[in-house]
Amino acid sequence: MKKIIVIPGDGIGQEITASAVEVLKKVDEKFKIGMEYETRDAGGTSYEKFGSPLTDETLDACKKADGVLFGAVGGKKWDSLPVHLRPEKAIFGLRKGLGLFANLRPTKVYPELINSSPLKKELVAGSDLLIVRELVGGIYFGPRCESETKDGVEQAWDTEIYSVPEIERITKLAFETAKIRRGKVTSVDKANVLAASRLWRKVVVDVAKNFPDVELNHLYVDNAAMQLVLNPKQFDVIVTNNIFGDILSDEAAVIGGSIGLMPSASIGEFTSLYEPIHGSAPDIAGQGIANPMGTILSAAMLLRYSLNRDDAAKAIETAIDRTLADGYRTADIFTDGFKKVGTNEVTEIIIKNI
Image (cartoon, rainbow, N blue to C red; front, side):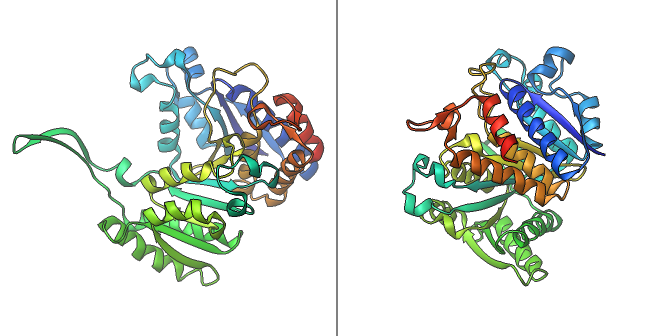
């Protein structure tokens, strides 16, 4: 049996993870994968029960699992807590505890939702890219100083550090992923200015020699940001460091017009974690109107990357394509002329389409 830890978290996380599990059960019934589920708390719900946003017991259970399906955490009711008790600390604890070194965030422009994109239709039609972001190194984790005085002037600083093994690990993942996609990797750096980027580029070139069937090109981060809005169709897999990936993945997320459909995967040393990119949306929690598709597509990524079941993952993705093609829309993507459905109803439709 394949053990899946389900962490609903807070707000709409409770509803959307329930939808994703129902879809996984249908896929399991069809493809005979053999999955079992264990629900654990994290975030605000964990704080309410245990006084901690992430307990050691939950982290240990995740380490032993074949995959972790995560909802969302946070909410105004916990905003006044000390920083170390805030729900968001659960995310950082899971990243560190599971060794989640890479974040994979796909951006796909659905033909049925192309009018929701802020870009011209002819620019985004057919766009389907994946950003592979290094997640545990770089300037976010380097030495820093919040405040010091030098020559009578207050200053602060952060340090960007990357080692060869860190760059090799993320680059290999990007190339292996490109092999099952369209065979192209774009490495994004700032090698014309930054020493860490020059090492990044050198290591990427060395790793690329082991993947002769994958095309490699390089872009400086400023040009990459521009190209994402000028011609997103040119990209297949983008690999980049922590800070650049943080910025570019958020930019790419809006190309498709709705973050409600955006999944993500965080690949780890022990196991991997899958979650939608949106937040807990406590203002609509419990109303049955949340869009579960981002979480359901995250479950598809779990099947693909943790269980090596690309066939089952494609079945989910095809079912969502068909649901959208048939005109069904949740509140966040609804426009006149389509069929408005709630969380449970759209989940049932997706299941029928599998």
